[in-house]
Image (cartoon, rainbow, N blue to C red):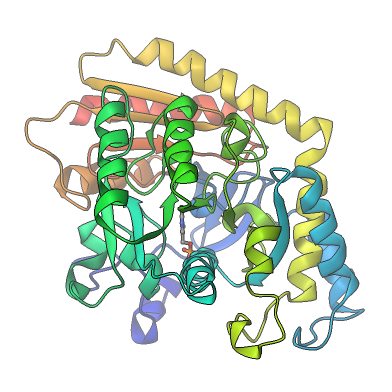
Length: 423
Ligand SMILES: *Cc1c(COP(=O)(O)O)cnc(C)c1O
């Protein structure tokens, strides 16, 4: 029996209708931007395994750091205890985060990073005895699959079964080109009509919506409105963090700074599940009191796992190396070249590029559904051709590991171009 077949006995996969889905592909090895399955077929990982792996699979530098930490101190509880990897990681993050970020809270994944951000924002006002309980989020946002994160998410595919069971969330359109004023007006209106605690957003790129982009100036404007109204701002950089947009963080493209930031995905280079939520001093101070009830009663068993911290430190070192920074520029330039070549194609509706992110919308008659037949046809075509891409409806995006070679990138572009012929 193959691994793919054995899988079916006991495993339940994410975002999968097991009755209609094809057998999963069993991957046995990864190196750099490449993956191999149990039949030794080779694939290019063109989406960095759900955006987590910028530095390549089975990266020796990160692996060595993890091994060293595992054989020194693999884990210790973070309640009442601390350790050097967490301390050093907080110090290193301070050097690259927006200058107002001062406090670092650890959790396990992107959803929990968002969960912590939202709970802190709500308790911030509770502690100040101010009634603010509404969260503002973008239409088509994605912030994760736990309850508060899901409430903030606006893609109905993920949330429809739980309607009516959420915290209060109101939505505004993202300020995409031409929709800026509508977005500002909607924000003003929601703030006027609701006791708004916080505005959560994916800065510059709405990943799960299909790499939908907006300009830094437009987001700056929204953050300015929030600031004027004492609404806390939460930048969900779970996808955009650590170089994806060409800078360390998407927020580095803006003038405004967020009150809270969420990061995960590339934090440990795709090795160990870990997430971080950071806060301003002002927010921390609202919890700092003689009264124990004002403390943040949130934590996870593996909070600040030292091995995860060691992986994150090694990853940060890689990100900041001149070689990796050169890779960011190189991938970006390749994307731009492909964009100028493909954008006139009669089947291409629109293209967009930011940093290492490339997205292309295929012209369709009707709106293509998120997991619809066009999406499945494209997905199968890419897999047959040895490229891992997960289209979203009619949107094909590429978000490769930064270490991908030019030749591998060209192969991805070629397969994307070929795919336009089959639709
Ligand atoms: C992936 C993602 C999340 C959720 O992260 P998980 O680790 O899957 O829980 C949250 N926000 C954004 C912007 C994401 O891309």
